[in-house]
Length: 82
Image (tube, rainbow, N blue to C red):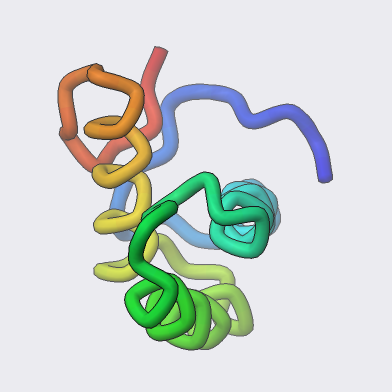
């Protein structure tokens, strides 16, 4: 996994998106994202796997980025920015 740089937004694709998705998957696997919702984590992980295979920033990636932002108490835009 590489450092994640801003700005990455819905609709983008390719290796930079796959790297972001790998980071999100790691956060799900470690229970950092959705820490008290094991079922939701499993469901999100399975859905993210498909987007990761396509390397596209679509609905699941956007939602997980937004959840991460909310949990970090920053504006939940669903866009990876500074």
